[in-house]
Amino acid sequence: MAAAAWFVLAAGFGALHAPAQATGQPLKTGATPALVERGRSLAVAGDCMACHSAPARPAYTGGLAIASPLGTIYSTNITPSVKSGIGAYTLAQFSRAVRAGVRGDGSHLYPAMPYTAYAKMTDDDTAALYAYFMHGVAADDTPAPATSLPFPFNLRLSMAVWNALYLDRQPYQADKSKSVEWNRGAYLATGLAHCATCHTPRNFLMAEKSSEYLRGGSLGTWYAPDITPGALAAAGWDPATLQQYLATGHAPNGATAGGPMREAIDKSFSRMDPQDVKAISVYLTTPAAAGAAAPMASSAPVASPATPAPGVPPNSPAPAATPASAIPAGAPALQVRPAAPAPGARLPASDIAEMAGKIGAGERLYRNNCASCHQIDGDGVRGLPALRNHPSLRHPTADNVGMAVLEGIWPEHGQGMPGFGDELTDRDVAELTNYVMATFGQSKVTITEQRVRALRAGGEPSPLLLLARAAMALGVLAIVAGLALLAHRWRQRTHQGHTAIN
Image (tube, rainbow, N blue to C red; front, side):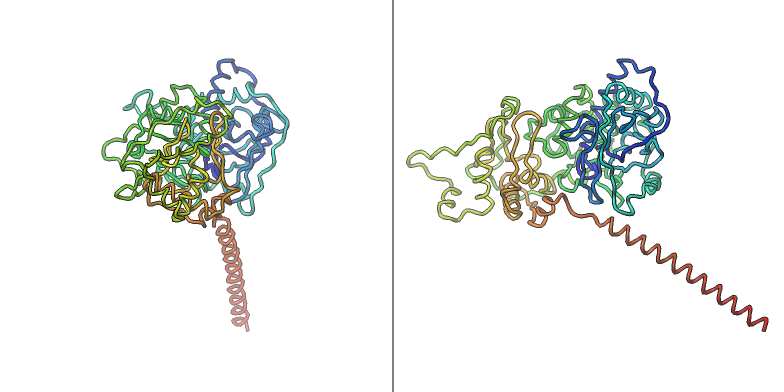
């Protein structure tokens, strides 16, 4: 859902495009306070702030650098500044940029700006959003860096072909067989909230695979899980649980948000109208009609029989964590040590193994870096989440656990988790991640040292740039060969003509 990550991809993966130099006069009348306020709520739902704001810069002045496999993309100034922002945009130009991916000067935006989702917006909502950015946002002339992708992706005209293939310009059409609440949720989830931007896998040309809608996909580093109704139900999600998660980043089933989803919750979902969040939750958890395709993979493979954490009975439910809101913002992480055993008590097998020097590398790393907060048995303490049976341990990839270890998780409010990327080697992170996945999630999914290295670097490099250049080179060679063939035939005909005359 989020509009962050490399293509946000998203998570997010947000609304990024090159600096705009619009022409024409913007609409200055008809923007009532009510319309501006409505536009503000729509901007929150669209998560515009997350991508069009950057540290140490005024709100909505852009400048956020997003590393993509094709190069760095910078978000732009979308304040009503005529000099550096969109202050010269007319309503028609604004609508075309937001819903069709074409700037005020006629050049094309990159689909890192989720205009393919915003295309679902109604005309009325687009007008309200325009009124907000023109009258509810302070103009600021702070310029944003220009996006300059390597050749051939710096040729924006190529996006016209991409749009012809993948842009559905049809606004959302209500399903009359569904409730008003469901339709409201569908309108938001498919449009402004752009859930599919991160949670739908993409094809070779980076377009969403419509046949795999919301079935999960990699953002290069973080993994956006399958959020189809069947997958959510299999993981214990219902509308109320999902609503709580979207509003707070925590859920009764033990889920905690991290990465781009954490940002989407902090910047967008937690600030939305609760009824809209409820509607999105209803839409996402409502089963499809009978006969519809089931999710591709509702959970990761698990070992059988389950291997419980040391001292934990098999199949024990994870204890509910104290709400994070109960911990003061900025409070230091708790340093909780396991209690000493009572005299004569038998030590757990893992403790005996540790004293004998036979403890595994993953468990040793866990004890040294994680157990003080998450506890030896993975149960967590005082608002610090339990790891045992955590939903992220059921994913078909261990990337999210690896990223949490590398970067940590830092919500805007409440307790954060530090990252260990500066302290642990790639091998250490892999050993620790695999231990957590196997011990607390009973998962067979593992991560390699090489994959951790790629995560640390921001994801695997894309072959698209090399292939695009190779294809263009082949195209040039084909043209040259064609011209050479035509020249050869022309010479042959000329020679035959001279022979006939002689």
